[in-house]
Image (cartoon, rainbow, N blue to C red; front, side, top):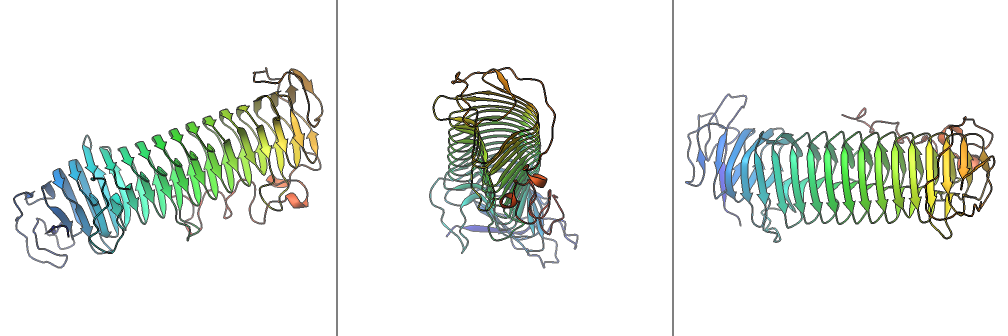
Length: 484
């Protein structure tokens, strides 16, 4: 059993008490004195110099920590109270346990003091547990956990995870350098990141939220920030919704770089992806509004089982397949695809939905490798209403249903075409870049998909789910009234 030095600091409470003591609890009404072990210096304020003993915090308040600690900081206060830990050049060697462990609180806020560098490490050995909780992270919280400030946090999590919150995890800024045997950052209910710089090396998913029980939880929301991720599994994962508003992302993964089981929305950002599996993947739908994407993938660059909708952005793709979904809709963007199988593929991945590729606008350049490859392949219908499409391939089009060219400028192996022909053989083959033509008009004809869905009765979008939308409407979670 780890030796615990119980410190209770009555700070910023409704009773107006200040100071510190080794034996003051939330109900104390006397002014405490400053007494401590020789390895722990307390100056009668909120400032604590760490020593060689575990530190137990049992009162709400604000605590500024500095110095070196061989042990753990353990927070256990009323579930209605908040603790703010300010880390100001802290070094913690926690051995075979967490460096910071939150047993109970309403919320714990960890502030990285401006200009500070704070380093937390464990021994890499299996943790020796002190209670019934399966603590498995260098910073482990059973309460809501948030990070503030502009300092630096360095985590060396040799046992398992870097940061884990079993509730919400919110990061508002700071610089993070995390090396973890498993997850680098995990929030069971959610991970929300508003800014900051993140260098993450992980043995499993780098950033993860995996609540499968609650429909409005298990999501990842990134507003901004700089991310350099090297993961032996997935880079960023959410069981439910994954939304990125902006940011800079450099993702190297042996799994999928960006993954959700439900819905991905990318509104902007700059992405450099090198993935052994899919670059961007969901079992549901993907909507891309804008951004810059450089994707090298050994599998699909962008894959959605249901719907993939691209409204804008710049894409430079080298992959086995470029874009794949049951329904692929391109409404804009500059898209350059080099692929060894299919450039764009609509496959029958969702029961009751007719596969469809629909291109309404945008500049697309598709270069295909030798062999049995198709620039645009649909197991259902293919409809081109507009845009500039330049194809270099042995087979320009392969569709099982209807093929319609209603507008736009389409060039295959140097020749502009006016109709779509299955397995068009232009004779040039190989990789290459062909000049585009001028933009064309747009238009819809019978057989094109109604309101973002696939054509025909079997191709209708399931009830209540329109093109690229979450089931409850774009931009929010059930019961939350949108993003907060």
